[in-house]
Length: 356
Image (cartoon, rainbow, N blue to C red):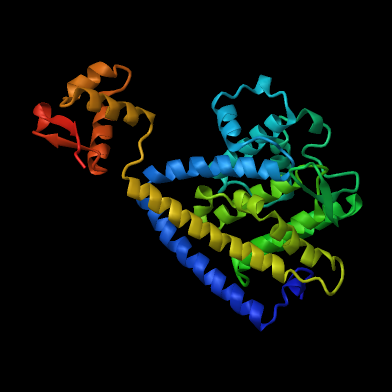
């Protein structure tokens, strides 16, 4: 038995809980991936909301004071040269890496080089981190919990600098081997990887943020696509005490034969179950509203409300910067979502707001 698997020596009770949670998560995964293939109108908005929540929560866990609204405003008006505060720099760095992962996760490898690259990119805008970004730590560090009143509490000690490169290499080799041979469930492999990464704490700063980004990366690479639309980071922020307790339960016996990560694996899987329930609720709310509209479609709806009944040519004249092809698609979508109704055919078609 290898150095990681002995930490997974669960009793019957834990095994049953894990099997039940994995069954639930995988069942939802299959259903959600079908939803994602069929429609994307609501998903765009859900992902936008989840992204802001993830950035806000993950940076606040590490001591940032920015609210989600402040983060949203910053990203909408972002000018790199004007990122004056550390909070702003960390927010933009997290956003940059998260979006990169969403767009490029199939190509990103679980390798030392890619992890170093992600760390460098995460701290790209942080002027105080210039010397050590993209490099393993050369000083001892600790896992510290930051609280809103400014108090810091040491959670546990981490791997000493001279052992970091060796432990990271071993973890990466083990993770890739296990994912390839599929003898162990991918969710358990991911849970082990994140626990070990946090235990090693390979960088001087940014370990917590990077661990949460790597969680997203690993889940996406294993086809748990729903993680883009609900924020794991937000759940951790809300249940920070449980998060640290689950880590500490294994960490207290670090480097001994007694080290077990039962609590962490259950915390990880239970968190995914909670996120699924949240996503289902959010998705149902969006669907019940009937029709998510982008900014252009909102303008079209407003125009129809003020000028109904209208024809396509009226819209073409009112919105000269939008192609007629795009306007036709927007009208068709709004009809499908039962936001507007049409009377007549071809050029004689007129459009009204659908009465409720």
